[in-house]
Image (cartoon, rainbow over all chains, first blue to last red; front, side, top):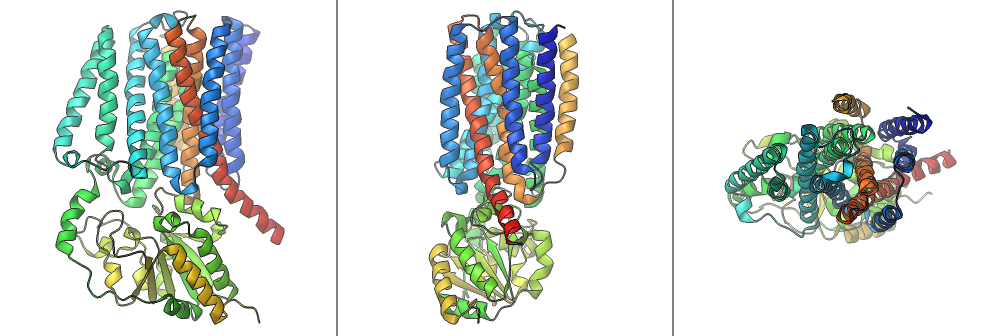
Length: 479
Length: 101
């Protein structure tokens, strides 16, 4: 080991250390931002390490520099623009898009090495069995990550709906045959046949689509998180392909951390990972349950003015925000309303369901954007015992997470999902555009309860009117 | 076999480290953590880089490496910037609270 090798080794070690500290720091609010930058620094160090070593070992040709700069400029620029422009409400789609790109990157690397094995003739690996296995894993996982993430993104954007045949049992047969095709191709590659490469690429890409397409929109965050974990595995496999231990460590860390996050999300929705992956869309069952459940009867609706009058005399108000709030871009108006209420001496808190928004923690980000102090955000377990002592609950654009069916009706597809017990409070106001069903397409029994009143209208407009009414009533005016 | 057995140890220990690192995460940070971890998974850009350098003049390989590098960097830069945007909203508020008190 000469001096330059030792230096490269040291750079790699420091980079891994910083990456680990970065992931660790990201799990604490106080240190999260610095941790994110630390991780970015670690990545730059790792790149510098690779460039430095190659420069010393074999040199970097002008053509190589050209292609490096081209890739860096195009990818970096597009990434920067996307990240700066994207609205906070479409964060899940964005993560899915980025994630898919990580997947296809690993796929391309493995494909390149498989098609042109000369490239790493100087690696210790040679073109042995182990390298072939790594290539197969990298292509397989990379392709699934890519196509799965793209489908997830398209579904969240509403560009894509689940075609009917993908909801039937037929999809299992299709996916199994694709798996078998990929497996045969893999065995073929490992035993020395190059002709298996393209069937593997195509088979695993289609498998990614086939597995993701039937999954319902409500389960999509879990899928994105799982695919995020996969992209780590793909990176680790690419690490085996090009013989980089740094890549293996980082990929393994992300893969494992992604699995933990996936588990956390599944717990929040009371779904097992297996039922998310193979159960198909909840929507498939709910079609029948709407037919069975029938129309809403006994709905009480009320005006914004009545709502304001009730709020005026309340002491404790809990807000239940949902994705509809974010879509209406009403979180800033909501913050105005709660400022007035707080100034009037009313205790305000926000009940955040684990899957509020489209992704765990998504609602927290959206409320943070509107300057809501995160101490006021209460988790479900924390806030549920408080509902009986709450005067008014304001449900804004949330639906399934406040459906009492999940507790009372064993035949409901939602049964067993932890929900916010808003019906325990004295009065519930539900702000909603109309009587349409929630994301899962299931009727909400809450709307028919006697202490529930519906305020129909766009969340932003209703909150704006509410603000005016409250000010007219003199709430929050210091006298 | 030398690299392989070492690499397997690295894989094992790296996975264990990843499992340990995020035991407890406040729900507020789930989304930023996911997008941060996602950015780190773009580390596969190192593989793309290596591919270009070791291509030794093989043009298709260089192009593939370059595309791989571009995609991975899209993931990395985009992931870190978007995570920073989210986290900035949390820290901005904690600063303001300090000012008030």
